[in-house]
Image 1 (cartoon, rainbow, N blue to C red):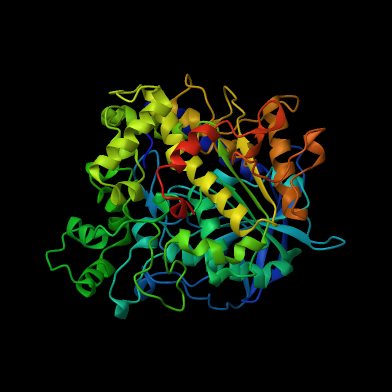
Image 2: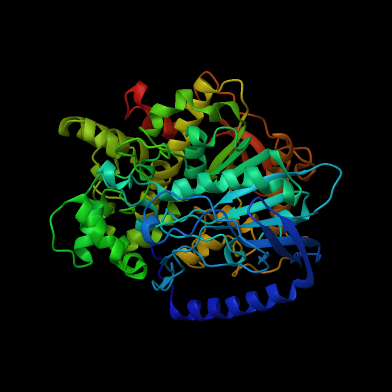
Length: 566
């Protein structure tokens, strides 16, 4: 999950980090304010947006749960302890323990269950709509800080914006089968549940409307949003959802049982048997930094080549508890999910597969091996002859040649776009049409290809590759360390205005149409007779169009029995 960049770019990014910190310091004011919460008072700081210096209030590092340390390591979060006096929340606290995506060094803290509340106005005629942000990062990386997700663009609108931390990798997703140990897994998802409960109970103190909360996430955060829509733990805690490039139907949101905890313990020096109680006892005594340093290395090359992206992620919990969030496969939860009653924005980017650019360059094995491209569930339920048939169908689709022996880099990455993101998004749309036919579902396709502002693509692929990669839309929703200030007449700035306009309009009313779209109109999904979805294509121009990937996705549908699609 690390990204390799050269020293010149690292040095440049280091300078950008310093510049960002100086800029953020200058955007703070000396004006503080104290508000009540259920657990005690908090002090926030008035800040100014990077464009136009518009004022807003920031309350950062508010604890929504007890620190998950000691006996709480690997376990479900517990409510926070009340505090006396005023808690200083004028600056961000620690990120979750993790390996830095660029440097590979361990950073962060186990004591990370905090959230940040950003408020445009503390007083208004009526409470403001609330947007809650769940970051992505493959359940291995991420943080709620202004370094990555600064709310400046959102703070030009009358909203409350909340960003939450949750535990990652082994510390957030280690799972053991022994029910006596109370470590069934998904602690990181349960952190999200706890944060949503805190927000529901406390956001009114920040001029937020507890009856108008939109849950929003990208990649692993988007899949998390979908999980939150299916678990009974969160019923009624939010009222709309925005899912960017990910859903719970993706196989990377359902980690297989490959003895990860035992393998992690062995890598850390454990010599005992494969007994859950002994493994937990050992891992509970190991320094958290040591765990975070190697938990992503537990996975082996063959597993990576089978599209296992990480060892520790969401699981089907091996037994039910009062804090269970995933009692069975996500697909089997959809028909009765309470989230069928709320409106949704869902979509992805036009070249999602660029995310895998470095992985394929490092290991071009994937360019000549087609069988592993088949979804794990399909491989496990098909005979070898059946898999051969499906591979020939896949080759015919993408190369018009059933006997194709190899593919080029970008041909593979195009297939990965469909495999990893778009087909599961399509399955989600089909499920919504079946189980939530009267509830609006708005499908988008982000296709704005800036040569200099699509930041994730530039980070992963360098400056010469073009295309709209996984996570590129975040450049137009959040200010961050590597963002540059734009000319307001640029298409990049106009795209920021459009994205934030649509997202905040949806958060306010459940409808993403807004003045920033001009004459364009985003219509809710209505499947045509040939099951082709219409999407709102977001590029230099805005238009409703047939989803360009539809023909390919229809062939992926045939890999599954109809009843297994959703």
